[in-house]
Image 1 (cartoon, rainbow, N blue to C red):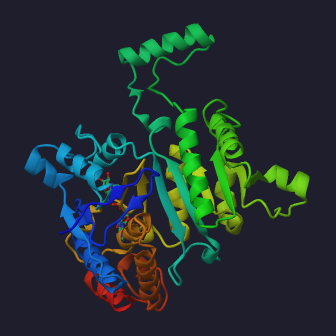
Image 2: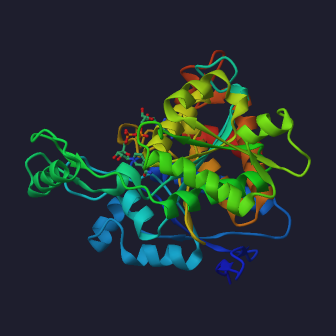
Image 3: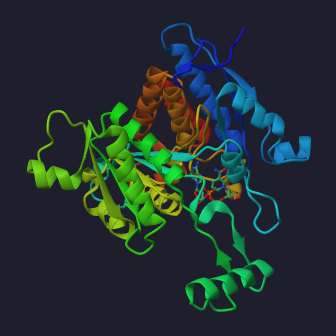
Length: 404
Ligand code: NAD
């Protein structure tokens, strides 16, 4: 009988050889991508050593949950994710302006999935707008709970907006135009530091050379500037014996990393960083960013290495994580057997690495790399890749399976 993954006292997972893993198919292109990804996961796990298997447990989320439970994110689904510690989901449609909450945002809030983690890796010969996409090897850690995404916003003329305008006028002696919408941007030391801690631990575990704090602290001194200051403070207080700042590296060590140090902590102002990732990508590896900067940066970096069809992701909290592609449900492409399953398969690779099955993760990444190298690829890549042949979702899945 399949068993649950359990969490040890020290925060690591005890993964049985037959774990139960919840999944939600999602909306739009979600179900067809999931069907293909699941075949690939099962084959990769079966081929790995140790007689392992996964017992996939379906949970409802999105439109199927609305039909079944009258709720797009039922409590039963949340409870199962908590019980089994990990889950993988397809994209879920958020209808615009119909008062339906975003399942994705609700999920992150309900489970306090405070870090959105997105590795950006190039698979040759995927099409790219830059000359040397192979120099991009970065992992984005985006804060997932605060900043302008916290949901505190009021429309023009609302009692709340008027009250805040009046308060600011009294406290700061500054006038905000009466016809302004108002949003709040809270950024705490607590949330910034737990995100930076996760980024540093990840960089150390995977032997990345640096963590870069990406902020706009020159303008927003007490929010984004706070993020920068708290990040450096945490690195010094909790990892000071093995990290050093970029400033210390050049001022005290002539730019040469001392043998007792493993990781450089640096920071960049966000607008400059968008230039840096285009001009000097090899100088950056793990990035830690507040919510809005991280949102923009992860899509820009995904474009540098071939687009959304190849961009995996994870929302990670304390002992619980939900894995999902960066892309949405793309309703216009649904049911046409044409989209790219790679982002979901690579999200699955992240899940397997997270539960300690790095060998399965590696075989999935290797199979995607080999499949893309055949130049028989789905439309999103074929459209821009010279000498390529466009194949369907199911045919591309067969190529991935053949390369496992
Ligand atoms: P989208 O990511 O669905 O589509 C954007 C573009 O990317 C489209 O041109 C599409 O053809 C392409 N694309 C997306 N996935 C692809 C794939 N696997 N292979 C090839 N091409 C792919 O973004 P959108 O159109 O802005 O959003 C559609 C819906 O998805 C909205 O309701 C939105 O709220 C939702 N959404 C959900 C999530 C999530 O569940 N995490 C994330 C983003 C958007």
